[in-house]
Image 1 (cartoon, rainbow, N blue to C red):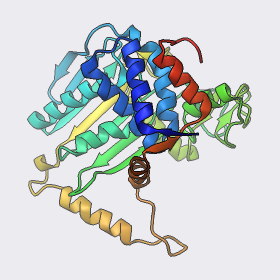
Image 2 (image 1 turned 90 degrees about the horizontal axis):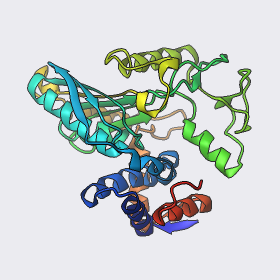
Image 3 (image 1 turned 135 degrees about the vertical axis):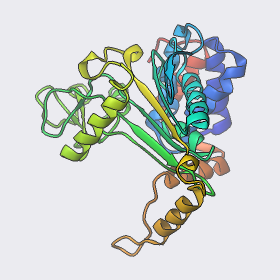
Image 4 (image 1 turned 90 degrees about the vertical axis):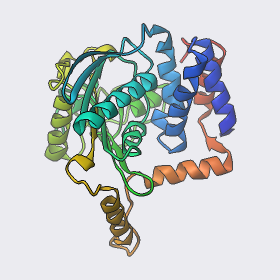
Amino acid sequence: MRVAIEELRALMAASCRAARVPKQETALVVEHYLAGELRGKTSHGVTKFCFESRFFHERQSPPEVVRERGVFAVIDAHREIGPLSAAFAVRIALDRAARYGAGFVGMINTQRYGILAIWSEEIARHGLLGIAANTSRAEAAVAGGRTPVLGVNPLAFALPTLDEPLSADMSTTVAPMGVLWECRRAGQPLPAGCFVDADGQPTEDPDRAVSAVVFGEHRGFAISLLLQALTGSLFGFPMGSDVADTWTTGYTFIALDPAFANPDGSAAANSRLVEQLHAAQDADGGTLRVPGENGRARAVDAQAAGTVEVPEQVLRRLRARAGGDFTSD
């Protein structure tokens, strides 16, 4: 059903008030999840807000840098709300990059957030190359595998340009686990080829599925392994089956300042690359799909229309949260 964006914003703000999120922090939380919805990343928009808001009351204290040396910093988020802890981590990464040319920030013990691109793009808007990644519980099996060992291990990066950042945001599985959770709630079949059962067999039954499938066979497997290390052993965080829950999940934020290696800056060069991508054609004579642009175009169209399509059961869940009900699902 079509719902006014302002209604969603108001319901999400009311949910934050019911969860006792301070007023000065509510807008950041609401706008973060709303951005995912408007960009068409519905598994990481209002749906995820409804899920994550159940844990808002578990925040303990503000995030804290517990180890730091040179370009590196490690944060204990003290179970902070995901968008708030991520914003803190990005500030630390930017500070490191300003001093050393690079900032590598690892964070643990935090609630989850929505789309990663928000954070890599924030870094890029400061003229830096931004990377955001995180692991999860062992919920992903490699193609042809049965045992889940890796996390879903999403990755986002953004390059500074003279205009909007060139941005990509992707999971290293064919579909994110949020799709499985929502299909279970809605009683709908899973998309084909995205999940496997306990025997490693593809399934579209959300009640039989136990693992997401890593994309790209051995190539996706290799990328997921790299991300596992960047969000795990690099900072002393758990990996694989040692990731037990939300609080042992590792996050990484990287900010790289091109000015330290390229005094002329890289934004103009990246803009020229974007122009070349726009000029390139696909096999049918059309233009290539440049990462990140479709999502931003969706958001612009949604803002112009003032409404967005939201499943009725998701809207019902959001209204329950706004009324102070954080248990029903």
